[in-house]
Image (tube, rainbow, N blue to C red):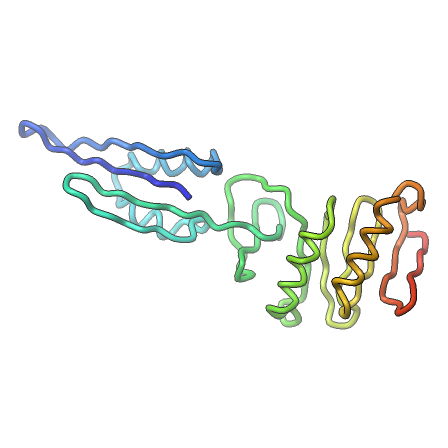
Length: 193
């Protein structure tokens, strides 16, 4: 969240002066710089805020001689490519900074909200995740380090627990450049890439 306070004063018949004060929190520095730069330009700032893809909501408050905007940024959930990300509604948007998130690949017609929740569960459960892919036929396939893991569509939580056990001894289990298939009921298979 970012709070931007605009102060417009007209003193002694002199032109209105613009002053910007912001409350910095853990925030995208490039976003803050861009917001500040655009504040001092001569077009309508409110239109700029509403048209910026990486801003989720804007709240405006007027108090005496001040106008205050509370700006909340969209939180990217997955990477689409380069500086494009998926938000919580699976909409693609531009974000000015590079954020290290796993890439999400899916056929737009095949991913439903329950699957998106599974993707978030997978992201939270596995460290070092590079890519998550969903297919209607084979379910979830993920890339971790140099390992490709086929999770399937069913019992995702159980398979993630099994995967974390296997990954805890990644080097010992010699899993570099391997495909780990966890879709089997009573075990898993490992093949060379």
